[in-house]
Length: 288
View 1: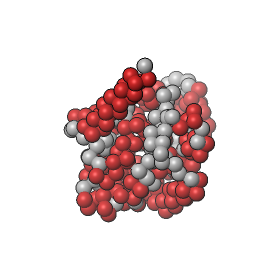
View 2 (view 1 turned 135 degrees about the vertical axis):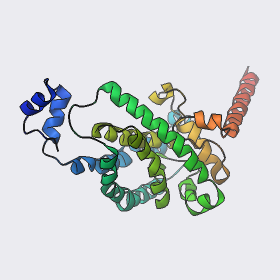
View 3 (view 1 turned 60 degrees about the horizontal axis):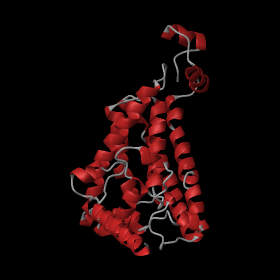
């Protein structure tokens, strides 16, 4: 809750007029508690889990020739009932694990210093903090994910997520409840190390989940804007990890490719890409 009773008080405290964005923020948040603002994440996650995958699911069900050519594993097709079962399982986990976890984790958010007041962060501040969050999460997630592919971690926990050897958007948060708790740790490390504004925190949670859905979509879409992000893994990179499955020792990173390259866990993926490129080249020569 903001410590100002009016916009005039806020402007007097800041020593300047409020920007348009700050005025909107004041009008919305002035009388709302910090806990209420933090709980917006629950609504955002529900909408993201439910709506963002829908265009991808429509593509999956349409079976259009113009779309199928972008599917990474074209021989695997899920029915509507299989897709809906995945969504129901994800929603069960959302209401009984993810939602309650959000409700009880607020003291941690206060402890690490996520603020809700004025002034709002600049665009550059938000961008740099989000970049830091993605880098920190990606590195720590790499090692935790890699450890979950050990014999005990995979058999007891991580195998649930790998039930989808050809993943779909809804399958991004499909996992054992313990995995959701464990992999939630890297998501909080960035804000812990580089505390920011609640708006930045909202954006971080939203963008991270949207990114996870995109990497699990099962389609390598040439028009995706993420193609222009340096070292971004994307659907093709992560789909190989699911394709290999429990024996996978490739492509553990959640967002970028640098960890897999540095630690040598993308060799199988790179070999497959070279082999496919060679086969395509030979087929092209035969057609000449």
